Length: 191
Image (tube, rainbow, N blue to C red; front, side, top):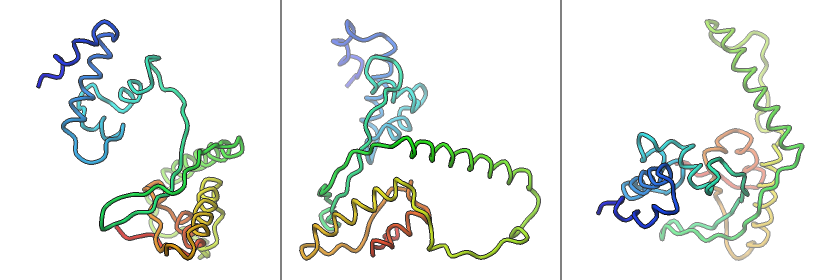
């Protein structure tokens, strides 16, 4: 079917630019496989369907990114049925201190990258560096929030369901997240 023919009824309300964006998004959604997210839509949309374009389209008619809410959810997953059962959902409200800490981490990461660029050519472990205990970490406010949710969920389900693994997004693919999971007496699955 011709997507543009289906969009004829929207001509009076949408601009030509929005119609062009919508047609690219629809074609991408029909052609794509896997999860439908803004990132995957932008990957399938091709030329003229960048992530920012998709984001702007879903951010109403203002033509710019609109701040929204962030939600973190815990789900029980039945791997045999490939089905997820949401069990706890909380809105993420970042405090001013968390925002400042995120900015400081970004600055520190940039400084570390610049430092590595300056030392380029030197291989191996830096002189004078010591071994450290990687199990002793300071959890970020985000990880503390998640850890509290996980512990609350485990206490609610205690005696009903035995939870062994905690599956997390790639954003949490770091040692701090691993230690947070281990502190909850859980394991990360190997994928």
